[in-house]
Length: 183
Ligand SMILES: Cc1cc2nc3c(=O)[nH]c(=O)nc-3n(C[C@H](O)[C@H](O)[C@H](O)COP(=O)(O)O)c2cc1C
Image 1: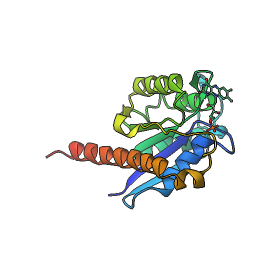
Image 2: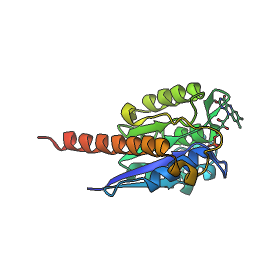
Image 3: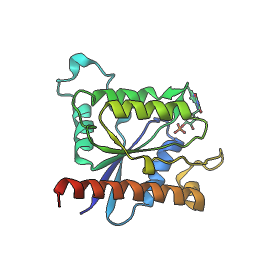
C-alpha cells in the first residue's frame, strides 16, 4: 500500500530554503510513497479558540489533509529562537481537533544553528500527541549557496540525507501499520 506523506514548510517566503528542501524530497520519493506539499499555510486565519467549531474552508482543508496523510514531514526556519508564527498558528488549529494524535511526524532541520526552534517544535508536537520519528528527523548541513531545489538535488550528501529521512519515515509508517493490524 502506498504511504502518503503531507509535507509542511514553516516558511511563507517565495524563495524559502525549507520549502525547497521539501520540494527536493518530493522529487526523491520512492515509488511506494507519495509526498504532497501543503501550500495553504498563509491562508489560515489567526487561530481563535472561539472559532474552533466554526466551518472555515482553509482550516477544514488543512485538517482533512492531515487526517488523510499517513505521516507528516516538516521543515521550518527558526525565527528569534522560536518556530515561525505561521507554523505555530497552523498547529494551534489542530490541537483541539486532534489530527496530530498518534500521527508519525519527521522534522528536517535546515540549519545547524537553529537548535531552539527544532527542540521547541519537538515539544509542541509531542504535547499534541504526535509520534516523533527521530531516525527520520535529520539535520541538513546547508551552506548559503545551496538554496534552491535543483542545487539541493545535485548535492549527493544532501540528496542522500533527504532520501534517508524519507525512507526512515516511510518504513516507520509501514511498521506502525503492521503493528496495528496485529499478528
Ligand atoms: C525574523 C527572523 C528571525 C530569525 N531568527 C533566527 C534565529 O533565531 N536563529 C537562526 O538560526 N536563524 C534565524 N533567522 C534566519 C532564518 O532561519 C533563515 O533565514 C532561514 O533560512 C529562513 O528559512 P526560509 O529560507 O525557509 O524562509 C531569522 C530570520 C528572520 C527573517
